[in-house]
Length: 289
Image (tube, rainbow, N blue to C red; front, top):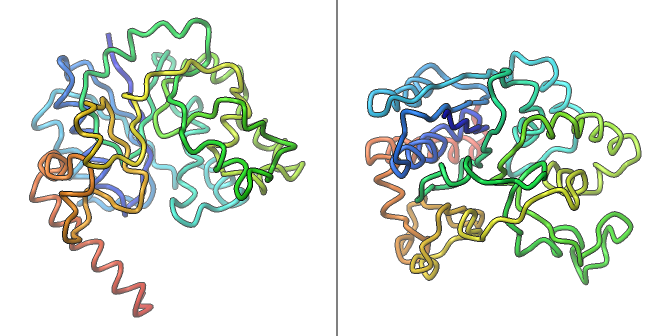
């Protein structure tokens, strides 16, 4: 049975996208059953070729979605509040049901700052018990929604409600379509709610309140540090400022599985990505281009 996995990324995140994809392949017993749905923006031919190279190693299927050619995505990305850190690529997952074909009944969405260390077949065999999605509770949920003194947005969120991290979401496509997420987003935008909340993650928590299955923390270990390695996480999520592709001294002693991550990305791509990031930093610093 095919296992469908969706990734969203832009030109500056192609290498982490490859690392996430390759980690799924490496730690899944039947990688030939994997179908990756690659939703991208501004992807150069050379970087697309890097991603295509996964098929030289694993007999996976790749399905490409150029979001720059999507009028729907461009409209959303232009009008909705912009996430300065992540860019408006975050809104792509909201329209995943508009992108995938009729053969997709269940799809696993993964952020590209993740590394998978266990067989995702477990998730595809999971009984969702009538829920629309499955996810992991975000330990910082009350701070995300309430902010300082947990007083913010009390008219929208109840801090007593469980709040999930949307970096890993197992989606029942039929129920996702029934939720009519884009219409709910437009409603939230018209009433001013979208301008107040934490982008798509908060929106999804509002839409699926009481309709999501809580997964064990192993399937989305947030802000993974070295101390967490002994807990044997299934999916490592690098949500903090320290990323495994960084080059700062002491990184291997700080970020969980940093050495493993480099080899999953492959040394060759790891160092090319480092060069790409340094080049971007200098351009930004010197305001070139």
